Length: 152
Image 1 (tube, rainbow, N blue to C red):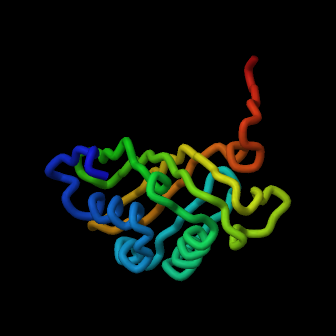
Image 2: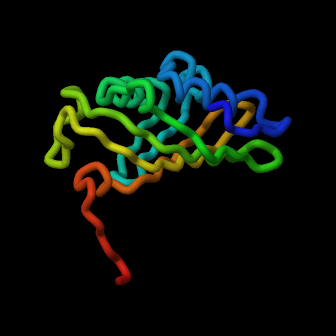
């Protein structure tokens, strides 16, 4: 987190969002959302609406993986537009899958490590997050090490 450069406009919600994501501070991050906020996971089409569903998503996500000293959430691109109504937050997430990973046919093996590039595109209003669209390659989780081709 110390390598990220913030401009003067990014003192509030962006810094706190970065702190909370990096420390798994669910209570802290929940303070940053509007009551009618929405989090969409684009890879799966899942939509979580309102603070209660977003808290459930965050709690399940934290329970589904373990971080160690070198693992965790490491943002490397953080920027906003000039009026700070849009945020792009790109990071690498490295963790160990736990038994609490949601059961599905695509569930990775508990105890396995994943390394996933993720981009969050956020809409902000009055220093509160209204909407997050989360982008990542689902195949990185369900078929680690397998290369997929679309155009070649």
